[in-house]
Image (tube, rainbow, N blue to C red):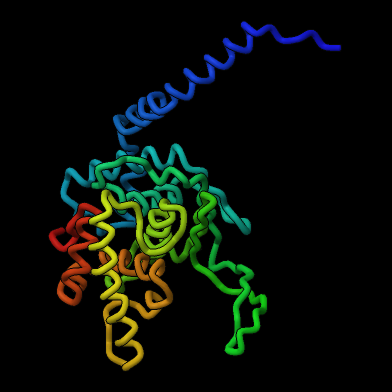
Length: 277
């Protein structure tokens, strides 16, 4: 029969655990501060110039902060190649730069805390989904995807679509921005089109403004009227938030003109005004 563990030892272990939990945020922030203050690799700057030329339009202060956040993101998140895809710094930096653009000027630096890993495929990938038909009968179907955000701490991306979204900012589509907007949305526990906001009052305004724009999009689609926002945004409020986030960063002037209240709400949330860049 094993000897009992002395109470003093248990108390010491418990105390050490408590101290560790208390100090963990301090250690994390200390490590992040070292990463932010480290020189940005020259090779990474070359990747940004090649893959994301539009970032040159950002004010210098935002460019510097974006580089700092990229350093932390790449260090903390696991990048996993799927289907034979090989992960390298070009992949890490290209994805991290677009993801961190969403948080570059937000007051809280939490670097997508729920996110653990980014899975990257060499092209569009397949997922099995249960989809009801017109009669309500549910059947499993294989669906082609270019990106997916999981509440369980994963984002899945197609590399060619990552590259296309990074290089072209004239069509309002960017798979990385889309999926990481879902990550912000899922921070509340579920994807419902309402990310974390600072107050209950802000939720009321958010709901009114985005709800009205969502309704207008659906009405335009039903009547065959043109709308700047892609039809996929009419799927549900979660997809609406993700799609309009793409348009906010990719086509800010046109969104500000077409939907000024929606643009203002997104500008307030992201604490950015890309129409000025």
